[in-house]
Length: 248
Ligand code: PGA
Image 1 (cartoon, rainbow, N blue to C red):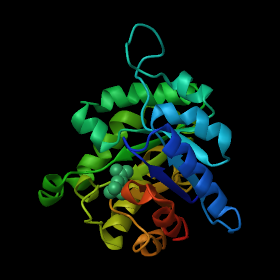
Image 2 (cartoon, protein in one colour):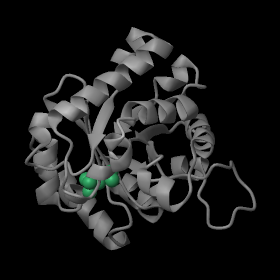
Image 3 (cartoon, rainbow, N blue to C red):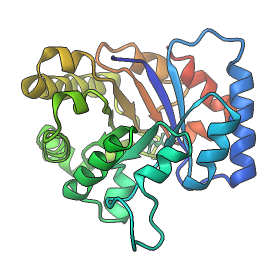
Image 4 (tube, rainbow, N blue to C red):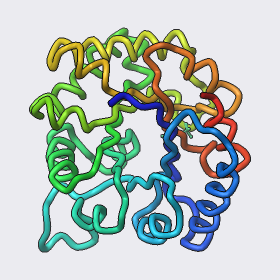
């Protein structure tokens, strides 16, 4: 079912103690409020079990391996992520694609393993500045979606959350305008409808990410095809994250 979601992505920030303290503080701060969205925090692997066992917040890993198990030193499998109590995994973030060479083919494997282990992928797609300037941003986003996800059955696809994150907006302070974001979200929803039908498309949560914060969340989340946000910088402080959550 389509849900409103605000998901934090801590990236490589916070040690274990800081992460657990943050999660408890956030949960306490949200306790008296009526929330209009699900709240998820995307933590480094080492925080997952502690945060999942000490709060009721949704918890996401930021990655998982493209292999099920075995001799892959340093990797963390989808089964291991699921065993911590985390229910989500962020896949295909542009930083993973750019710095760690993750291709659509690798992300397809990761997605299958995440789903096989009961995790919901928060699957990131988005164009670079250069691609937008060349006016190929729709083609890029469509190709990322088709190549990594459109081999899935409709049932499996319905467990995916999409995060549209224009690379030029991530960590730059250059948020996409709500018109730019809505235009792309509507395009993504149509792309999904063309493949899986209107019902699946209407039930898919599509989040926006890229310099979203307490100042712009309300306008972004007010767009008909924007179902929430994947939040980096503004998810690192409880006082900055809450106004984003309250954008709904
Ligand atoms: P940002 O990051 O909010 O700091 O731009 C978003 C993301 O990378 O998911």
